[in-house]
Amino acid sequence: MSKVNLAKLTEKLEQGESLDEGEARGAAFSLAAKDSDLKRKRDFLVALTEKGESPMEVSTFASTFRELAIDPGLDEYKDRAIDVCGTGGDKSGSFNISTTTAMILAAAGVPVFKHGNRSITSGCGSADLLERLGVSLQGVDGDHARALEELRFTFFFAPSFHPAFKEIMPVRKALGAEGIRTIFNLLGPLINPGRPAYQLLGVFSLDLVEPVAVALDALGLKRGLVVHTVVNDRQGMDELSCCGLCHVAGFGEFSEVREIWEPEELNLNRCSLSDVQGGDLDRNMELLGDVLAGGVNPGLMDSICLNAGAALWIAEVEPNLSSGVARARSLLSDGTVKEWLGRMQAFFAS
Image (tube, rainbow, N blue to C red):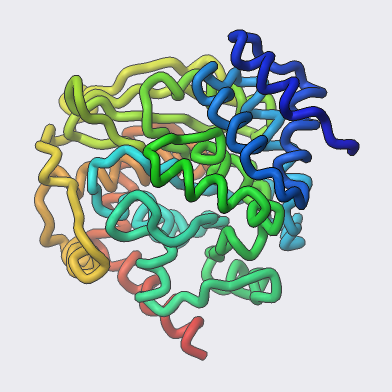
């Protein structure tokens, strides 16, 4: 794929025009190319952010960077596998709900392709927590197939599978220091190298729920949900939570789903933001222990079960959301998830 003229595409974006598919694909390749002209890349990303990414631009960037990713070679699992993650960037300081959800799913027998990185916008990212639990941040040479066979879980450490990202990293860091988000804040959850068929994805802004759902539909996933919780007029969360209204948009087989979920309507406990907040790595480890022992506040427990229940429904393990929530609660209360965690730690320690 030949590179395009980023300067001309930047001018088009600055005029409020969206890129066509060929332009978006060419721009993605240009951003991934070795190029010392970082200012040109910066100007393009800022213009795209200020114009606002269209669903087609998001899906085209995602499909291009999927092509550039290293394939872990797990085709035998991908049609049954799920990823559960958030974009980050919501500034809510929440506990690692998606990582805990992934543990519940694996304990239920659902193959989990967890794709993540160290913390960027929160006190404790998925990689940070999993590494403390003993999980090897496996690169491309990790024994992912054996982990899936024995645990129904593996972790793809994002920097190991996306070498193309290193060419844009200096610009991303500089823009991040200025408080400017880019399309790359969205791409991480969309470019899981294992390409699972199912996904539960939380986004940091309510405005992104619909376009990201449309983008995931274009990428051809079997089914899933894009979610955002509105806590108040100043705060939202990139996951389902019982401390606000959960806005939900489906894709694939769930493409008709456009709903708002209230905790009370789901027979769950409405809670405050502080009930679902975590802290640094030590604090989140403590909270995880409390979750497994059934000793956390009802709002956090219900929020975890809501996410896990939705994921079990997405993965076709449970027929609906309510039965998924009940199954998640049972897996936590009867010690199944705690037993699974012990097996996971033993696996990575061997």
